[in-house]
Image 1 (cartoon, rainbow, N blue to C red):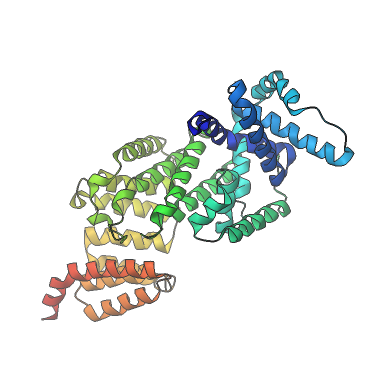
Image 2: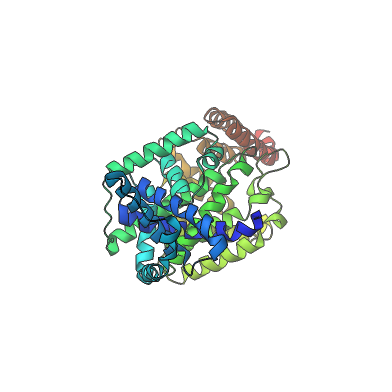
Length: 426
């Protein structure tokens, strides 16, 4: 049998995974048991589906087989009694499959997957463990694939995932169906985890961007899954739109040498118009709900950049207003710093500099703060103060890639500001 012949099986197993593992987790209340039961069900599927064809409901089939195999394992360990032949057991699955499929109504299905995702992003887990656990349990990526994306050894990633599972087991996560308030809280936590996964891929430098690109793609897949479960939630629409609009710029973000290309310098013909169209449609739909949230606002900002055919077409006044709204909903010095860039385009560097000066104590170790501050100072002809800010920015870079990025960014800012700086110095 060729790889093409079995491709439909791989696709069916991947698609059914979140629902099946989520339901098995509800049955067994143990992450390892649920994952092992699903893997065993997949092995049975690979053995029987090529001969028998796909079941009517692959997820229901996997849940039933996985549950039966896990229960059989417990019986075997406890009683050491003989069990029915595997093929005989599977041949009697038809009626049971129909029964469990009927029980998988929309709300049950939603809560199973939401519970599974929420457990992976439990608040007691640090972000790196949340991401690794979600990629392993929900997405089904191998430890080798996850380790490669995080640029660590397989052994280190295996330990990270094992520690995460242990902390989840000790956390006593409730398995009962969540109420409306708890469901909303879980949804927000899961959305944040998906955004973390995306940013792990999106923030990669030029030499690792291709390796970590799958993280962005997986985050989008999970966001779309969440959107199918909660199609009327405007913030999930906003999250999905934000990821699509940012990911649409992927092919234009780095040059042939792997150096980052700033947004205003990117070849916009390389932007993925299909992703942009999907993202724009989603954010427009979300905004019609009139229940604004952080992801919607960020997506709306990304949409304004996406709609600009040329950098000079960018609606900076609207971006300023949107960042102002984001400051109210989600106050953050970084949000204010980003808003200051828009302010500099609308009202000039003096107003922007005045806006960010109070942020200095809270952003004393944030290299982007000093890069942006240096740019404003250079535009105002305050060359010596700008040089000090630029030096501080480079000193705060955490990696050589970040330092190179900052140098490129600062060189461009200094070059663009040079005529005004020279004139001011005369």
